Image (tube, rainbow, N blue to C red; front, side):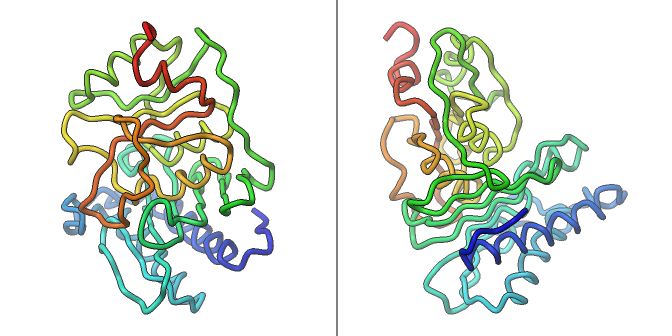
Length: 270
């Protein structure tokens, strides 16, 4: 991947490359799924997550930047900077542990809230592709511009998180869509909407604390906005003000074409 002349992006690309190499090396280890602790978000930390996060911390130190770090495993680390690097060392870790080829490194850099994220980088740990965006400068995949697709009614493809905790609204949208996928990797699925591979991504569970954290979506939030899409919660309110904290959760309705909003909000009978 070739970084444009944005110093922060160059550092973030190096972080992704470091994590990619370490995860690939550990992918066949019989201990990659061993639980080695509890993350700051309250979920178990597997060995593969620990390895990936250690690479992030090492690469940040090596780059000499003063960014604070917010990560699922270690929580918030104050390093004296004005900006915070919001990290999911492996988004889609259950996929990675099971050998399924949908997992990413997700990095968002900015201030205070989701709306304050200025730079997003999502690196596909399987294909090796890298998606990125800088506020006001567009979105890209491996140097090629990304643009959302125009919605073709009755031909839509939605990514929808399903399973036992999915909300009734999410299940209803799945029943009304022409095609549905559920990949278990929010950053990748939102990046797919940004590049026109899908029309929307919906994550809405039955209780708020089962919804997504900023570590899941900070990078892809900026990428999708720069590609021309929109991101809201399931009440169709802005999520710009969601703080960069692990104890906050949000539902997500991410879409490419604004013409989709009525369908996503009210269903096919709107």
